[in-house]
Image (cartoon, rainbow, N blue to C red; front, side, top):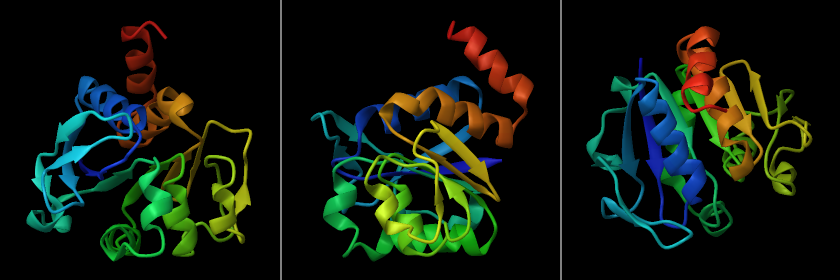
Length: 181
């Protein structure tokens, strides 16, 4: 199993960097790809991060799951960014796991991917998935190949849900023990 993590300028630091670090700690094979014209992105709290690849350099067929962080960029690009939407759609059509945290479920909602499904997201983000079943009090929700999480404060639960799906619940529990959660 190999994953692709989308990096965008103004992504939320904790949602992207902590999720990536915890997954790599758990030995998940995952690459990052910038949705920008450069591999370098600036996070919402002004950290300069270098992605492994530009998104245009990767072959989506080489990946089994996709992760999308939230952050202020979502509101700025939700109506104009076709690259992120097309990438999400490609994974969804192939029935590959998609994880989206905080505001990122807005992309899935706009594509109709959350229709009829339970999900969580940052409060207010549910407006883009009016046909979904918004569970705003849940930190992470897993359903039919989709894992959503509420916010930067739900990264641990997000990673736990991802590891349970990608590896096993025993591996997810082991990670929590290793970080003394």
